[in-house]
Image (cartoon, rainbow, N blue to C red):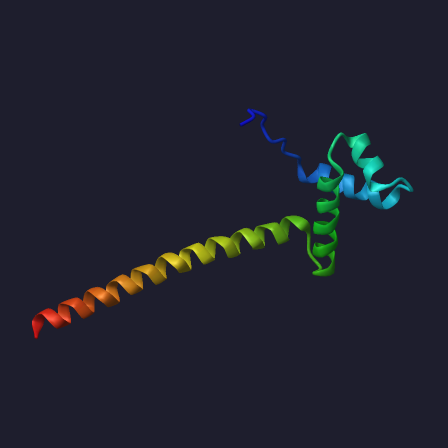
Length: 98
């Protein structure tokens, strides 16, 4: 396994990169090469920006909303497991009393 670390890019950088793609007559691959990033990464940022614009929000807000949904789904899973455990425990003790 390689010891290479992932590079993190600021939201400002991502926004400016997407703006370059939209304003420049160059291809997305050419802009990505100039910025020193992979073309697929730049394409993903463009898709995220387009998706956010169609919803009338920003890419950061969409990402935060998705993270919140994941957190809530995990929490719901935990609560369901607790409920099922308590239900089975109650059934066990109800049988024991008879």
